[in-house]
Length: 430
Image (cartoon, rainbow, N blue to C red; front, top):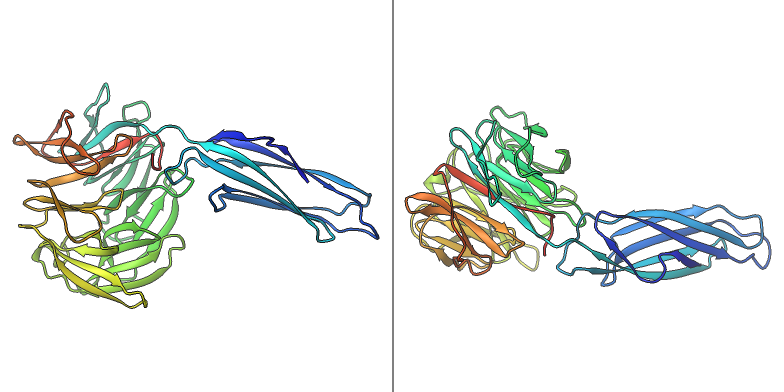
């Protein structure tokens, strides 16, 4: 067996259709007839793992020596995880003839993705009237929006789509720098009266386009750029979603039960299977009752739920598999006004002052006041922080690691601004 194409070392880009051809030559059997031939082609990084595989069968030949050519096409991923760029690939072709003899051949290639860039910082002002602004664009707007109770905003990297969450989820194309008519909408699939978008986060599966993690009253969905659910994680009857986030190989949901308790639920992020839960009664006044609020955090390698008095309930798992709940009183004064998870997994909390939590329960002070929202500019290694500035509201650029202010112009916005999201040309890391 030998490769016809590629020969030598090839260089490919993302989102490219690569034709592959493998020549198979099998001498005639020494006695009698031989059966059919099976073949398989695998592609993956030289460092290990398989990104793509295909296989098939060739019918038995009545002649002596057999010669066949397998032709197939690999569509390279829209993006790939990991910081290595370009990534070295190994292509493995294996054929097994009817006598059980196997031949294997290898080839190498390089896959390169385009350089990561960022465009506008899209900012949501809930008004009324509701409007969005493309900060950093030649014509930033503001642009009027339609929709009730808009409170969430997300840009799908590489798709040119701005997602707006309120009573429904709207997808607005912004590929030319200005919002176009709504491309598609998705209403709540829960059937709950008055349901609305409760969570809207960006996620990027390995080797695919950016997706949206969308939380409704009774479920969490992962939606593709066309608005079709790719995965669904269902809550149990009586549970209502408060927050949800991807943490390592799990999806964690924070829910309120019909009895007014709080519960963290762990799902397998790939299969959607519910694999565990832990329940308690919230004690903070702002977190109790049907309208009580709370947030998910990540502390000391475990999911945690934050109540409005700064009390965090950490869901730990011991090496022997036993689990439990630890209550942590996080440093700071005043009621928690906002909190969130950055795209790199760090948690932040806004009280009278604002702190960042890099995995541990010991938070670092990064701002002397309250913060309304934070969004990451991965291409430039910075974070935009929405906070009060000179009596108004402004987006302020801080270093992506230290969260120290940078000497970039602040972006002043209306006091009714709630959220923002940086637009990138593609998903994935640098």
